[in-house]
Length: 435
Image (cartoon, rainbow, N blue to C red):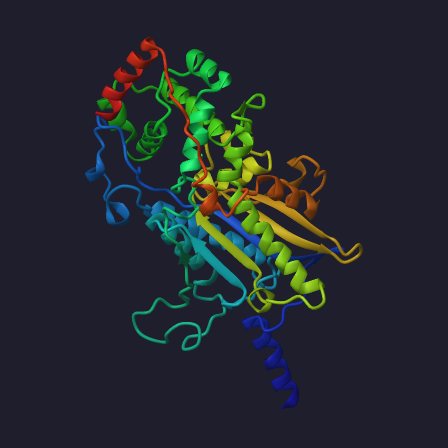
């Protein structure tokens, strides 16, 4: 009888994650995982005025602009299952790192305050912890009641005000970013590019390729019948323009652009990538300090934390890739991270040299496996890279003040002029697409 109770206790601990042996890869031990993902497939967030597919054309996900589709929900259900297979202690996952049954102390899910990212997070958690047969117990982990989906464990999704979310929303209210962008457009490089390559207005340009991308998924035949001007070549051209705008917006220039004694590219990255990169590295460093330094205080909240998620947008994933010099992986084959794209930063500890390392993993799109990309980062030549490389990236991109204050630091950007011929062309494009 004693042997039976001992076996039962071991089994209960395994299922409910009371004790999980350290996850090791040789001398490396996994300590924490950060995931930044894009939401799944959605309707357009808006469109150009001449588009035959206006808001009433989109009925899924509650209807209207920017709503997650059933396909998008399924994409994140599948990603959640992939993440479970990589990290959850099922006995046969890649790393038996997280408990088999949801434990609120081990994970925190943060989403931007938008329907599609919130529902993507819920769909992802459904795949990770909400299926019948995952080991959760009726009456303990979910209601043992008629009408409740068997095995569904609701997991809280946290959010903040969208307009002031400088970590997840790359288009948050930030006057400094707009001021810097105006300066960038006055640079010799951008002026030359606009004269030779772009006959489009940069403001809200993304609306057109974004709408056309989605309409090819849902209304491809009708799109081509109603818009005789639409061709694959035209679409590829505007995607290429959008790619370049993205790169400029994130401070990627062919050479350093200096205006008003500022490195414009670096300053743009401080606004767009800096808050997220520093949020991650601060949490990793706190985890390390609380685990390995004596007399470290304020550790209760992080001692059990192993898994932190940012459920966000293509530009959020892009901001991490750009910060690490890996934006080319988002640009090809499309101009930005695809639906359910995810970049994962794993924190590992070397038990031999007692130093911290990180591994960068990328999920490019729905259906893809995870790809280790650490060795694509400058100064990283293998799967594991010294944590100080990531720390230096975060330090370089750290805003000079807390971001809510730094966003208010601007100067007059002066006047901005363009040629009459170029202005005339923009008016034509504006009238066609946006009126």
